[in-house]
Image 1 (cartoon, rainbow, N blue to C red):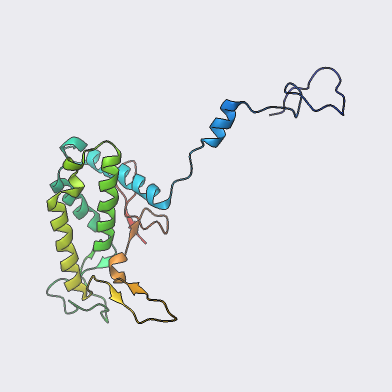
Image 2 (image 1 turned 180 degrees about the vertical axis):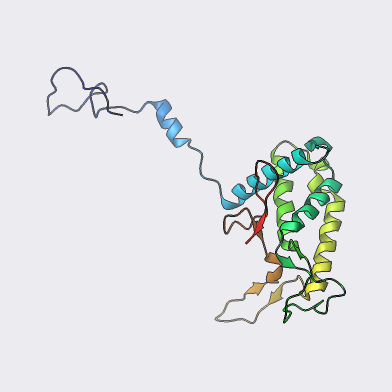
Length: 213
């Protein structure tokens, strides 16, 4: 918006004053506001916020509705199982001829689930978000022993079903540097429909919606 024109004449050799066009002086308060602008969130922080909002939405849509104060490790496990329907990681059943094959030669009817690595990362973000939003560490449902046991069972069962051990493998030195890698199958991350966040869920108006990268 244009500023109102100043009244009276102005000597070109005289520096413009605060009340004249082009001579606006920023106040200390204005400087503090500009300097204190909120920095953009990192991808991790943005995904953590989306995960947290979606979990709260899940509790709201739960039948019967749940409050965060009443949420337990059992409810967290129920949430993780709910997310399996949005997974894109093939997990072979015991009777499948491709059970234990990392790269099966043909498709099969086994279900798609969330990869263990994605669930593990999700729990880490939600555990941090719970405490950042006022929750006490000792009552954090995402750090419950039952949740840790469930994640360990998922990890072991997926490793057996897919024939992929979840452990670091050291590579030979090349050019004086050492590289290490983990099984990439564990990193079949699911996202909120964007790309590259490595996230697992996003919130919606009705119910959590997830997709995979």
